[in-house]
Length: 218
Image (tube, rainbow, N blue to C red; front, side):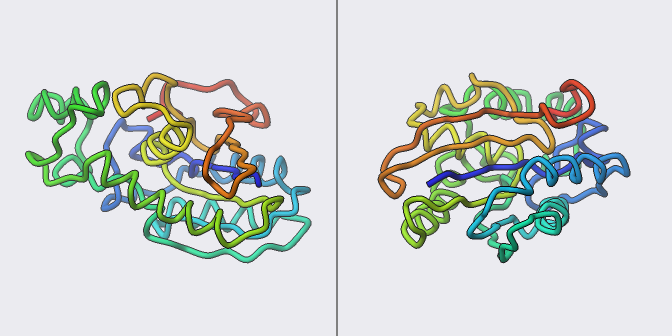
């Protein structure tokens, strides 16, 4: 079984270095629609059994654009377990402002996931995020044949935490592999219905018409 994880297209707040989270949802940039078409074209020949997406607009639209290009039609389902981190007071804030007002919380979220305490901002912890996302992955890997291919469209920070946890990376090291770019594809394989996973491809953007930019990783 192969799981293809795609991050949503780039938004205005990505470009402005603002936190979006589960409660913030700025508009997708006009150029991001072309990039969604490019990732759709890259994935179009894969016979996906199903497409799953976060219901947040930026992910939902990205999934719909990709789904429309698939040569083998696949149903699309939305699930709020695939939403981005709930970031409370951070949502809508520029990174610089968040760092100035909540320096310890800001630093731990970015650099020390094992020490991150979301209480000051009313947010969601890494273990809680991973628990809700993995419940969806467990459901998928249980309900499909072991040779199925599934597409999952979600969010940068959430996918980073989820994918690394599936690979058995300790909480303190979740950030060490680096970020996931907008409209990137990461592929995991499991041969035992989700008991273990192998990384086949990380943060692939080779199908885009530009190299990864710093703002693509926001």
